[in-house]
Image (cartoon, rainbow, N blue to C red; front, top):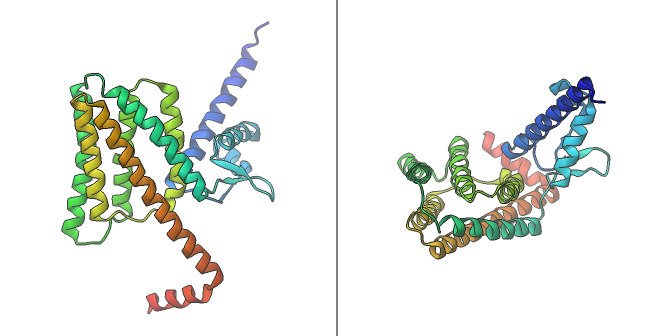
Length: 260
């Protein structure tokens, strides 16, 4: 016998679980929840006005996807990527995005989609010009937010055109995992922005002219360049972290000098 009350409770629990899932996911992507940081099941339940059960289910799902991991002391923390994790994630992203772009470039690109992609490409050029005008060495935090938004938008829009929801979810999850490390990302300089703009324009031109081989090669080169950049930043961050732990007095003196 169907029980409407039970069905409604199940739907509400599912809705809260999905809300908690998206809330945690977005907090990780934005950097509000840093790698290694703990997640409070109780606080999330209070914040979302629910019991702890759907929150726990959302956290278990995120753990299965690699975003969270069990803390030896109990509870869950945001996953901390190792160097080999970054390599594997970029290899997966390259394989899937190259396939997706090859598929897209074999059919005619709609004018509306071309215009949307071109707008995202032009936004990077706009940031490059702003940086040149300001004479600053790299983008500030707000400019990096704009860069990340248009960079993610460009790749996400391209992948969505492959009309493969499973492929799109795997790529999105992969990019999100990479973004956990991107919290350590420094602002891009003019050389980096110029390189990324050139890659995006090459990819768009190849897709628009239905040149799948050219588009696939450009995506592959672009992702490999991004991987090298992330690994370089990771190595720098690890060196700094290790130095700060082994010689903390050096950093204390440096901070005091900056305050004078």
